[in-house]
Image 1 (tube, rainbow over the protein chains, first blue to last red):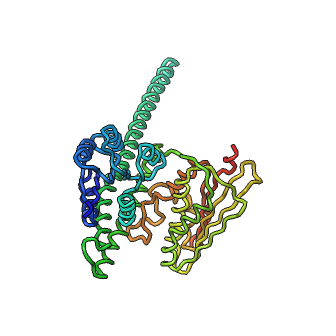
Image 2 (cartoon, rainbow over the protein chains, first blue to last red; image 1 turned 135 degrees about the vertical axis):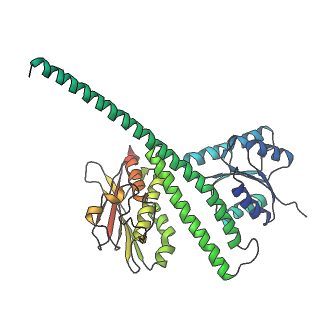
Image 3 (cartoon, rainbow over the protein chains, first blue to last red; image 1 turned 30 degrees about the vertical axis):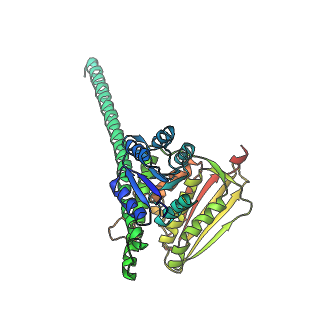
Length: 123
Length: 270
């Protein structure tokens, strides 16, 4: 049997990560949750991440620096998608430049979120 | 009166006047700093409201889509109402945030070249279900000579969406709503004009200024039939002006409303 895709959800709101954990666990994924850049990097160091859903405002800094730190340690997730509060062109441009595959505005309709994640984990 | 006395009185008055001016300046500074605090508070609270709303909506969608097991038809309807209520709330919160940023001069324009027709089509498509549900008809007329614009696409989309949303909200079933885009090149500064009109309840001329004022509702009573933050048109005006245009309306009570805004055209060639 093939391993379940590993999804890392990085967000400092337990309410948000709780909801996403239910969504992905119930749809056949392994889920890890991190509330800070430091936690996120240590999760990725422990087990390869297929998809990272990354909030941009974390208690210990800019979410995108988690991605940079992982890249330096060669533990970058296969795909990273930024989750932001607002759709602004300059935010989107910053995320894309940092290597995010997509920039999604919270709350992402779950049908869309699942479809995107399936496309990345199956493709 | 001795001439010396009158000099003293004049000096005294001048001193008094200066003191009063200083006081006024202090009060003004105090008011400005409080206003900035209020704006910051609005921005913070909007952000803090979004997070729990995101969780609520996501959980509700998980239930609705049967990810945790099948729902009865009635359960699904109920959960669907939670989602649409949550999305409405989210929109209101977004408006407050945009307003707060506008008030703090934190709104910036990111111009790009686009065709207004594409925006009108997109916004119309998004509103189609609502228009059908209310039994309204929507007509779109974009003049073929309208050139591409250079403006902030997101912001202009927000304006069109707000005006069309209002037109739909304030027009009773069976009414008509329209969007017409025209191009005026005969004036010194060529411009594109967008009209969003409806056959709805209309706005009395004495309220025309009021509708663009922040937090204003023409009917402020708690029992009013139309709800909202009262910020939509304030934001629309701000966004249009940021992009170099102007916005106004023509309306009378009971005779529908026509909102217009212009944007400078020909910027693409500059």
